[in-house]
Length: 439
Image 1 (cartoon, rainbow, N blue to C red):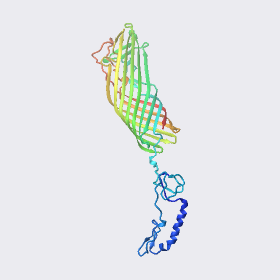
Image 2: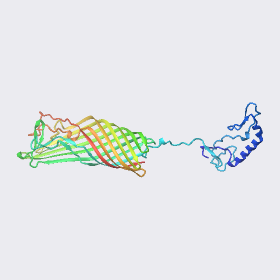
Image 3: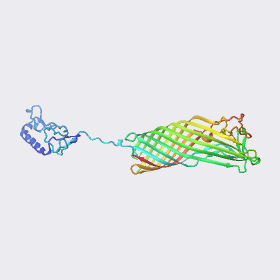
Image 4: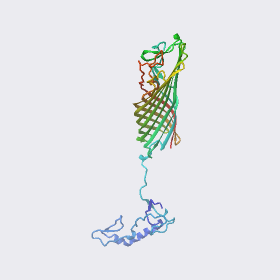
């Protein structure tokens, strides 16, 4: 017999008519006395209660209902009852049973907040692009103050592929408290420029309004100039989620967490000239800049569902510090003699530098997708990310280095070298196609 129930009637159903007949006989036997004036029946307790002036009390003890019996333990039979037809202590269809208490029900407010799944993970293929880096005017054509042949504009990085991964877990069965994380990576992007003189005159501006002649047909110089920029980007974050609103078609969560951003750039400049007076003269400058953002983050994330279709979005803002590491090195070679510095990475400018600045890093994302089966979802999306107070590759160099045109090996004390890196910003945009699993 289930332990949550106890018998309502202590006798088997076939014995019920005999019990009714006994009560009826007793009633007829004592009916004259029980019906005497001055007595009133008490249906809550089948014993007549006397009133003032009534005859002596008469009881109907034979009709008293016995108390509820305790739930029999397995292998036992309640005292005073026949042996049940089934095994001892098991449910007997000859009894009526009532539960000890009202069964628990699950209130509607405690249903898990959608979408379904305690855990989730998604992977994305991305197509991304970044904002251009600004290069100062570095090469002029015709004269030292002529039109700019290279620089004074943006160095555009082409579209490139990337990957993204997001995931999380709800910490409770209602799906209102959880943790999520994301990681995005773009493959290195490159831009490269090569310029040959082809009978034109080219000049590199130097300090004090001077110039270095890279090519000049009038003096018998021919030359070439090459510059390339490589950009790498990655970002990640981890957040605590707290639900603000939830119904059958959507939800809205607040996010509090940590954000990381990483921008690395390599900027290389190579120049060469040949002439009657020299066999070959060339230089090379290798510039690198690494910016890392660390900061606290707040934001909102929401989702709205219509049938199997859904649209979701996030908006986050991070405040923190930008840690910048820059390095400038190079070599200058004239007729086989090599000096350990380049055209732009002059003594006093070459080497490593570290700086820290305040920065912000806002991000937004919009996703549109469809539920596939019980656990899968496919989606397309758009992401936007911004970083400020960065030092990019071209920002490191001094566009007018202290180089003497007639003797590039000479260090010019009248125009000391400087390396006051300017700051730039960066935005990253990606289109993505992804698959999400929830379980």
